[in-house]
Image (cartoon, rainbow, N blue to C red; front, side):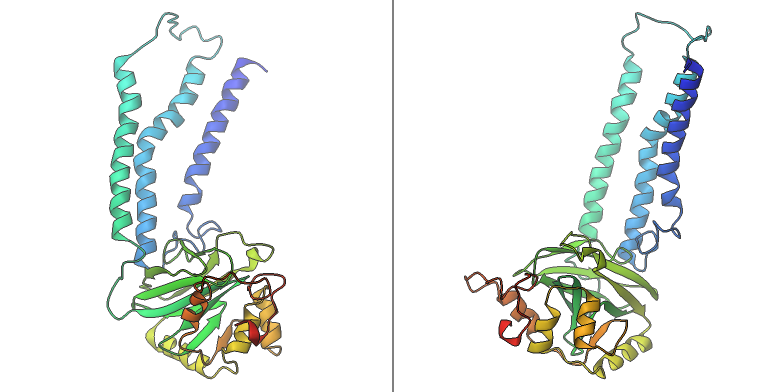
Amino acid sequence: MNAKHEGLMHTAGYLGMVGLLIVPGSLPGSALGANSFLTPLGPVADAEREYLLDIIGITMIAIMPVLIGVPLILWRYRRGNKRATYRPHWTFSKPLDIAMWGVPVLIISFLSVWLWHHTVKYDPYKPLGVDPLHIQVVGLDWKWLFIYPEQGVASVGEMALPVDRPVSLSLTTNTVMQSFMVPALAGQIYAMAGMQTQLNFIADRPGTTRGQNTQYTGAGFSEQFFTVHALPEGDWQGWVAKARTAPLALNKRTYARLAKRGSRAEARQALAPGQDSGPLLFASVPPDLFQQIINRYHDGKGLTAQQQPGSPAYRAGGENE
């Protein structure tokens, strides 16, 4: 391969890198943008999207000279180009060195302060308004349980919330650590057994998106996602009314079966065999169920494999809970 072909290949490689950096971020309707903060449903995801675009623009100050300059240098100083200046004893340029080190230092310093400001502003524990909708979230293998304590209902595989009303999530798990994330509404937050974490957000426009567990938890991990509906107030009240008329009740027996290791489809087959698809809705919930799940890990004694949801040895019977 001659020098000319080498130069062209390097140039094509760098142009490909530019495409990889720019194209995915510019296509919010693409597969990469769907169900992400690139198609936000609320102000937190809106801010994340704007922050990403601002970061890309600022870092381009340092990146674009490299992406443009390297192919030009390869072309300019290719073998056989007699017009290129040859300086075998050149070793240092003070202006060039200041630019090469000074500009990145300034960019990193600015972005560090800016990141700190945005992190504090959108603290996941910070309420985003008065009268929030409280939802208690329990991670199981491999499904999410959503309890609405004020409405007295629960769901699996679906979280519904009203538009323009703050939402406050309390999260825990009854199995291994999990990572809760609804990219179109807020950032990621961990949920751990025996502990409670918080996540606050608000949907300012109607829409449907998807949430998931981003912490690998075993064979059914890829199926642990759920649908999120941001609904106008009337539709939200209709969803609550529908849940209150569901044939299932979340009690000791049904929760024990729900906590058994398995997919949402397997839980639906066991609890609602006549229901082919869709979320599981529960018309009633014990008022202290969420706190009971947390307290299981606070008595100073370890749980046996038969008592631990997520364990292959777990017995899905009322005596476990």
